[in-house]
Length: 187
Image 1 (cartoon, rainbow, N blue to C red):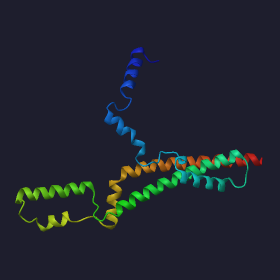
Image 2: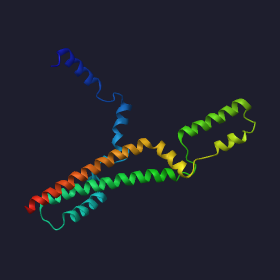
Image 3: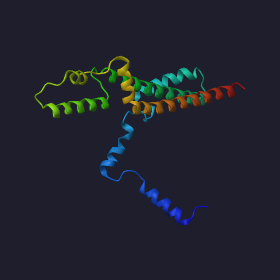
Image 4: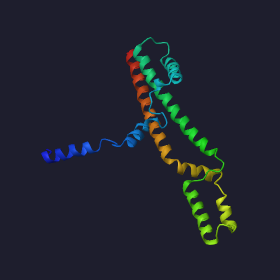
């Protein structure tokens, strides 16, 4: 059993951790869900909701059972969300890969540090050594570029993976529920 003192301390801690207090912090937190739009309901997008409707009709077939149709809608919504997540991942990767002079932030810092070191040691009017010049004007290509992008965007990809796992899980359980409902109709 929790003591009165501990309960009081828990209530005080809960009051202290209720989110941002400043106007700037509240404004920033209010934009959290708008970062990629994946937390929005499928029905919020008219084009997407039309596609979900078509897919749900195809899944439900010619049945007139309302329960079967609603379960088909759940499957179609999860499938639409899954497609959205995969499209966002593809777009993120494609846009980043299409930057010809893409380099990691860490490598950019190394380059800047090297240039600043050359400027300090030789002065601003002395030509840069060839090896420094080559390094500063080099960017990863091919598999190295791909690996660099994956490392740099790992956080964004992990967020997309969470949304994908959630959509897959929702779709799986909706399919199971539909199968069970159809099985019960037959027996």
